[in-house]
Image (tube, rainbow, N blue to C red; front, side, top):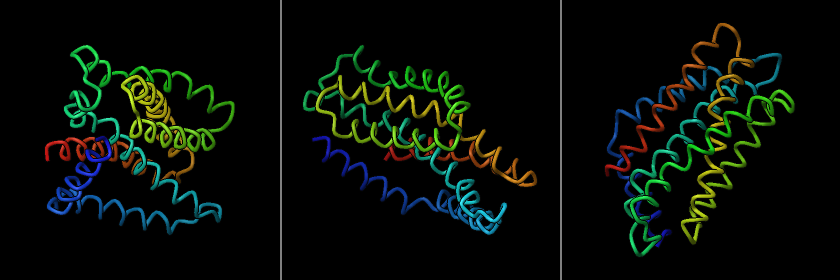
Length: 198
């Protein structure tokens, strides 16, 4: 059931993407800017320029994942899937905030101890595994646990990404690149809500 729903959601998202020229234009501009930034050589290391573009885009994808629950919950609450009552439904949607809170609290000290780059990579892996856990969950309890873990990654990434971008970007591009991170958050959440509508 969950796999069928995921397939249907992907098809609807793809159909929406094909019809949405405004968002396509914005994404094209982001990649055009990314190509310009990627030509920068900062101390001879081009991976930094790639990181400056990929981090905000990743944050956008994270925001899609955290917001898409608003469309998925109608399917998840049905008796065919998890059969949720009103309180369970509310907790299933909002439990990610608990993880976000923990991620924001612990990401700072951990990044000071182990370095921001390492923690961003670990955060991405945690997010990947928890997203797979949500997709493959066989009960609401497992789904909630994975959402809380995903929340930890979301909170950590939301705090670490702008700091890491600001630290590694050249001073003349710093403002644009940190703003790109905020724009990616907006674009990711908007894409989730638009895909939910369709």
